[in-house]
Image (cartoon, rainbow, N blue to C red; front, side, top):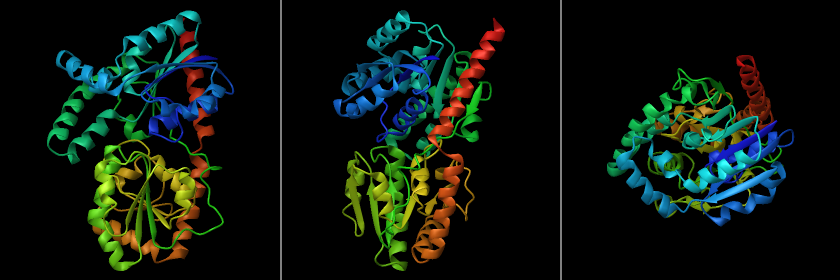
Length: 395
């Protein structure tokens, strides 16, 4: 098939979740199909994986989106449009021209766009369409509005109002819509939804021969992302002191790129370290005794959990963090929502290496069975064929 991919951020396996997903879609499907990619990017350092992306694609077209300019235009456009602010942020005449040029030069069997913010560009291509929404922005904004403070809460409430009506219109604009969990799918009652869970590369994220450092707790992810910032602060303030009462040598490592000022301040607390970007997240995970994902907001599937499970680490998370992952609490993963219960679960795992190892083994087995990028690519390919067969029958 000839496929046109549209991404709001450059596909990159080491950055944000949508970049990870789009990279692995290209990697899994580029070997079997001809893919033309049109992507935004904001900074040159996003393009360090450009050669790897070129290997997956027949062509790559890039359009820069300066953050300051896009932000200013979003404020002005928001006064006169009811579209979600994230859609307005990615509104670009340069991107429209590039998509139109690529679509004019060749015929595509299908256009595959990533995230709600790329929906307007689908209309520029005369081909069946798939939207990789990944999760429900309505669900994400609801949770963000519940935990944010003051002005940010007002912004998320306004975005929720806009997203709620925008997501309802999706059924009329795409031929298939992909999300990572059944819960996210429930927010698109009239759309042609298919559930395709995220994956992990089990060859990269694998246990190593050396045991992790006793007492070391790790939390991974992009640390400028608001749900991760809230999660890190919640654990440090409400859980870690109780953990250290039970396990005095316990330490907490916050690992991931672009830590916000608030996260960096957490690094001043006793027993807390903030790494920033790490060359190998797998090595960082393997250096710990337990991983935590104390998520209070967000949606979809948390790749940080899948990666830690793939490394054979026991994981302690919340109900929100577990999300659409089909793990059995108490066997594959530990789940607690109250800060005291969460802290006690972490301390219990740190104090019982045998149980920790058993949870780690079960978690890795689950990932190997259900959460691979190759399996996700096969599922997406089946959806492509269903869409094209349906179009053929309609003709």
